[in-house]
Length: 259
Image 1 (cartoon, rainbow, N blue to C red):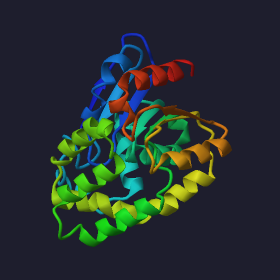
Image 2 (tube, rainbow, N blue to C red):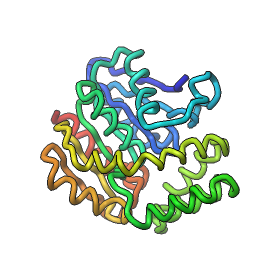
Image 3 (cartoon, rainbow, N blue to C red):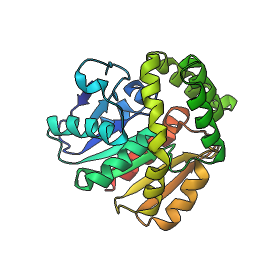
């Protein structure tokens, strides 16, 4: 079963659902929770195998992971909580899941906040994945994860984000890491489709100016997707909600309150 927490507002009927990235957990939103729950109902969840959503609790956790299956986990939680519609805030791989949910169940998504969005894997990213595929069964997963984290978040001012994600990744098991890593086999065609199709849902991309792997694609994408806006955060890398939390909170909350 997916582990999650809700924080209900006394008067607002608006929901914000936070979706973390691979190797993280709902704890990465600790700099957001206090401010967001002042205005909205908040749902924080741990993706399968992450945080308190421990693997192998049920037979469902033994199946091969796909983006559709993990997206359905999110859908099952909001159905159980009778949340008809929500704003969704994601970081890194979490943005892929949110975009997938919007594609399949657009009526459940009020808006999308895409932090450190992954919308294309450039050549360097693809080479990293190929390296990971070759080594995933012979090299301890934490070594690979630390290497990937350093490549994505290389600068000194990215250190807090890097250490946070590595700390959370230590809670994974080697087999669980491999399951998630296998998702890379379906990521390129999925992202190609996302870039080609505008789902016409209000979307705010919040990207660090030092997010060298992923920012260029988003800059191109927002020119074609009329429902999308881009905010570039100065002196910031991939994990914008951790590195520049006050800017992130103020920007996103203002955007959501205007909806």
